[in-house]
Structure formats: C-alpha cells, structure tokens
Length: 408
Figure 1 (tube, helix red, strand yellow):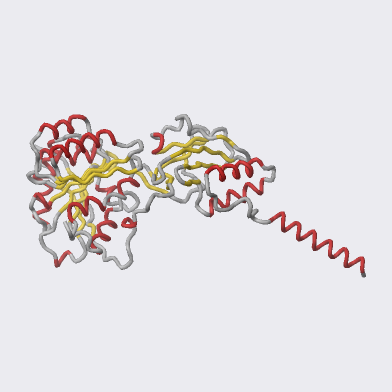
Figure 2 (cartoon, helix red, strand yellow):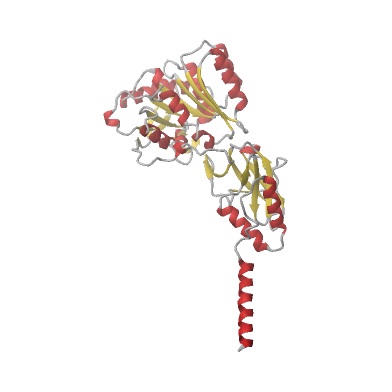
C-alpha cells in the first residue's frame, strides 16, 4: 500500500512538473517594460533560447496585447516572425524604399526579425513588410490598418499619437444623405467631357435653407469610410453643433465610362479649364438644384496632394466663386508659390496642412511664409505623419471648423 502511495505521489509530481513546463508564459518574460533597452534585452534573450515554446509564447503575448510593433517613448522595434532569407520594412518613414540603410532586419533567433528606430513619439505611419525582397505584405502580427488608394497598409501608432475620434460615427448621430453618382457634361470651352460626382446633404435638409457648400476633389476617396471618412466627420460635427449644416460635393476625377482612367494629374495641375468648370459649370448646377448659399465666402474647395495644388490654384484664379481654400499635403510646384507671392492679396481664407515625414513640408512652408507675409487668414498644421489618408482624414475636421464653425 505504501509503495502504491509513493508511485501515485510521484505520478502527481510528474504531472505538476509537466504543467509547469507547459505554462503559457513565464511571468518574468512578459511585463510592463519601462524602456526600450529593457524590452530589447528580454526579446533577444527569449529569441536566443533553444526553448522555442518560450519565444512563441512571448510573441503571442505581444501580438495579443497589440504591442507589435513595440513602441515606447520615441523608440520602436519593428518585428516580424517567419522563415525568410531577408526581411525589410518600407513605409512613410523611409519613403517606401525597403533598401534604405537601417530598415533591413536582423534575425535575432527563432525566426524573429527586428529593426529598431527612433521616431517622433506622436507619429502615425503606414508601412508594409518586404520578405525576400519581393513579397510586400501587411504585418501579420499587427491588427491596425490604414487603407490607401492602393489597398490596405499596416499602421504604426507611436505612443503619443491620438486617434481622431471624429472619424468614428458617434452614438445617436443623425446621418445625412449621400446621393448616387451624378454626371455633368462640361462644355467644349472647358473640359469637353463628362464628370461624375456625389452630393452630401445634412440631416434634416428639408427644413434648412441657404447652406454653405464645400467642393471636394478626389471625392471618391474623401467620402470613402476607409480612406477620408469625410461623411462620418460631417455627420459628427453637424450633430455636435461644432459646424453649421453644409452641403458637400464629392467630385470624382475618374472617367464615368471607365473608372480605371483617372484624370486627376491633368485636371489638378494648374488647369484653368478645370478651375472654370468648377466655378462656372458645376457650382452653377449645384446652386440650381440645391438650397445653397451662393456667396463666394460660403463656398469652399478642398483637396489633397495634387488636389491641394488645385485648391490653391482655384483660389488664385477664381476667388470670385471660391474664397474658402482647403489644402492637405500640397504637391505644389514653385510657380504656384511664386504666383501667390507676386499677386495682390485676395479675399481668401486658407487652411493648409502637411506631414513632416516624407511629405510636402518644404513647399508647404514656403507657401505658409508667403501667405503670412501677405496677411492672409491662415490656419496651418504640421503633423508627424506621411503622405497618406491616415494623415488627411485626421485633419478633415480642422478646415471644416475653420470655415464653417458655429463660433466663427
């Protein structure tokens, strides 16, 4: 009997030891790290351990807690786990060039690849992982995404970045209405082809009168909830009484008969025919169909990149119709900056923003300085982001409040 008890005790001890070996994670491995150095010491120790389960458990915990990439302060460890010959990172932080020195990963053990960089603590950046030089993939361990005009990218959120809550539909918000595609045929002296657009009208439109209007180039992207999310932002701001109810016209540069043909590069590059189309044809059509305020200081235009250049050009050439000028990350050439410098001050109110990481900082600052010297009413923003919709959608509320704010 005593022998049986000894055997049984030994069995339970063996089971207990086995459970100890199978424990999901050593509490000494994963904890609240107080510095990047502390984290790096631990992950390198775990990755070098011959106990693969230990490194797998550590990795799984990082992933579950949304700590991949691992960022603390102004430091970030870009991480990837998988069998590969090479791993690199491409994104807003290096101009989407995976071969840039410092962004090629090292295998620190157990197929964990890592690059450590310093970035502004409030940065938000798009990126992809490049495996074996040719496979561009979103980060399989990162659940944060930002869509671009070319599909989804992974999103690096540094610790002090603040999520733009206005891009999420608020509880109880009464929604406006977005029309189906409409088509207008521009006359022969301007574009001489068909242009498609959609019109947003605010909640309770039937009871409203004399509404300001904002014309939005690349409208199919600004109005997309995955990209600009501008419909959500409009609904939220109007519901919260932060801006007055407005109409938004989302102008699509794609050929209505062939959406793969995008005409934005021609339309937006200081094209007087496009500016005249907006001012003399589209605006006239909208004013005839909708309950608009037709004063030029109640009519805005908003665009990003080439569209930002177009906004500035429309303000310069057609301030008789458009006096509220919205510009995100402008792809200016030197001529438009020089034209503003040499022209008389116009009756314009201008919003302009740029990212500071591989974006349009230099020309934006040059234009900012000209506008300030001229005495324009200017709202100007610089943020630690790149040339992406994550940048622009977080700054859609700013021009809307600047142009149409209740207290303005």
